[in-house]
Image (cartoon, rainbow, N blue to C red; front, side):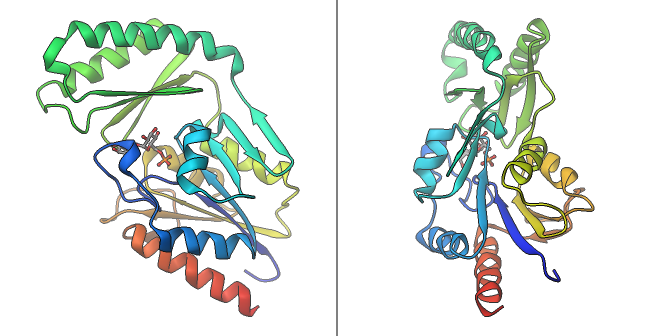
Length: 248
Ligand SMILES: O=P(O)(O)OC[C@H]1O[C@H](O[C@H]2O[C@H](CO)[C@@H](O)[C@H](O)[C@H]2O)[C@H](O)[C@@H](O)[C@@H]1O
């Protein structure tokens, strides 16, 4: 690390909060919150999540941090407020309506499919849906994205998302935050912890500049440098980093 100060970028679901049956059940363990609180007193800490900004802020429940919601389309922190893609909100609104109509047309077969509306994205959750209906839901979302070129479909854990079709992702968001916070390459070593395919954009953005850490039980292809097995191991790592920074 040399003389560089770490800056910590944290994904939420599957990284610090264990995956749960539905979004509202994925709560942050108090030990994870305490580790993040410790680190925030020692270095820059930002959450970068697919969740809606207000939802993410409430789930983490710590003041004074930087929060990037909807994969970085909606960012807020002390002295910082950025919204990317406002001009796509009407496209999302239209897609939301179409999607709900099409899901209603599937009737009882779509039981368990959950639509999570965020300001800058729509998540379609299939975790609780019957295995038989999942391919039809995937086809439906992909067809919707194909018919609305201003939106694109991305994936996740038992999840499909519609979001603005523009070159913006977690990687761009992390680079923009580093820039906005004046954290230059010479003085800062960014760490990014994430568990999912959308986090790969951030790992990629930090190649040669920082350290990506993918939380995953088994090794998979990734642009991250290190691996931690699960959120519990991620908390151990955060506490070790805090110990090290406190002793520095
Ligand atoms: O970027 P993240 O913080 O990892 O957010 C990604 C998505 O996480 C949430 O969905 C995921 O977690 C749920 C709760 O554990 C789980 O039920 C679901 O299957 C996962 O895909 C969140 O609800 C989404 O909005 C985020 O995009």
